[in-house]
Length: 181
Image 1: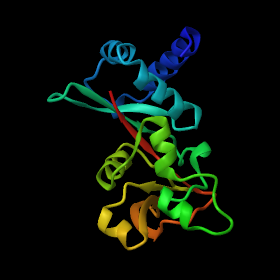
Image 2 (image 1 turned 45 degrees about the vertical axis):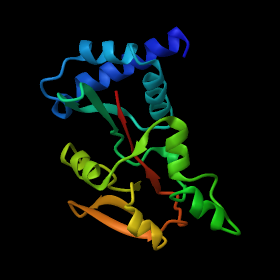
Image 3 (image 1 turned 90 degrees about the vertical axis):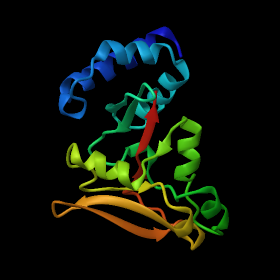
């Protein structure tokens, strides 16, 4: 990543960090920045999250591993990661009107993972997310083996988890990512 782009990303992340202190009480930006600068591949992934509309922000620090956790914190499912089916298997099973890609493939190419059900619930404790959109979440293999996939959203002041066919895709459904640095 060119130095100018790296500095611009770090400025954007720092600004978001300072504007949303409720997401990361007791954490210091300088320590996070040092960790990011020591891990350029993770910084690249954060850049991908940012460029696709995810608005990544720090939401946790793990004392045991020394890792910071970033989630996509955009108000709605990231705009450049919508209209995707769940995974490659679903994409390949479709005969007509296929989406451009799958959520799992895009996340993998970005170097991130989809939020789990538990992580999605944690995110929703930090604010009201996906009030007009929805987001695919990491689906347990038992559900996926039956052809389904899970997604979540917030409606009527509550967080809902639903299921759909893994091959479904909608203009208002994308995915949120998690990255540990």
